[in-house]
Image 1: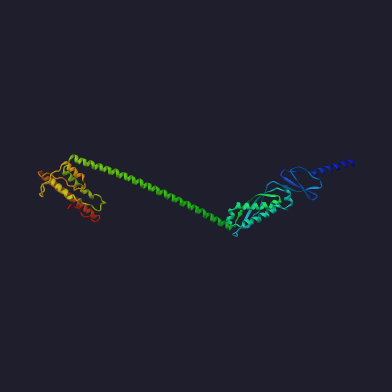
Image 2: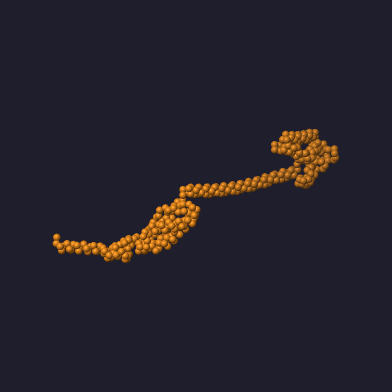
Length: 366
């Protein structure tokens, strides 16, 4: 082979090597630290960069994007002497590639150890319950300590999160029992509240029902009383309008007496004081004139009306005139009415004694 060709070929290879050693292409979000003869020279930015061949070399290649670092579970002792395993997640970003490469040998290991040390200091001042409920406070304190320590390393800690807090198995069982008891307590409280509301509503309904029933009974009694008052008024008007015979009034009075003891629930009965007067009236009406004295005159319509209106006065039925005569059949009817009244009174006494109830004294006009 021709020596000239060999020389040209070697020169071309040298040129290619020099060009390749001179040009450096840095990707986006990457930083290259350049050393010249073993000393830091500069940091290459993304894009095309030129360096001195043989004299300059790349020492470290760093990624300046935000990165996530998850540490392994580490045992930590709380203030109440309980050992818990805590996992942390760290979000960091390289802000100074030179400091990250030359200020610390391994920044990830340094951050991990600093996180564990700070976490033990923070958790050591809290009990278990406070540790489980104060994650935000723990994260803030960790971030403040790490950000202050890693600033000189060219690293910014953006966020620190506690991924898991695992207490011992026995503590987990106790916590589960406590939570179960709390749920049972809330369930019992809710059940009691429901029963209380139900009883209150039931009482309100019962009260409304009693009120409505009482109002209905009151209206019924008022209507019944109005009906009875109107009936009595009609009977009273009919009696005075038709000028009823005293014999009829006295007989009706005696006819009502047997109904006093009709009910089985009556434990006592009262004989009106006007019974003997009514019997005497019937006797005088149907029989001969009484020998005790002259017959009383028949009152006028105005006097009869006044006597009926005043219920508290002595109820006396007007008698017949002295000149009136009644046949023997009328006297027999009067005797029969008196016997019926006496029989009704005897029947009422027998029923009262049969019911073993104390007998009330008979009322009579003296």
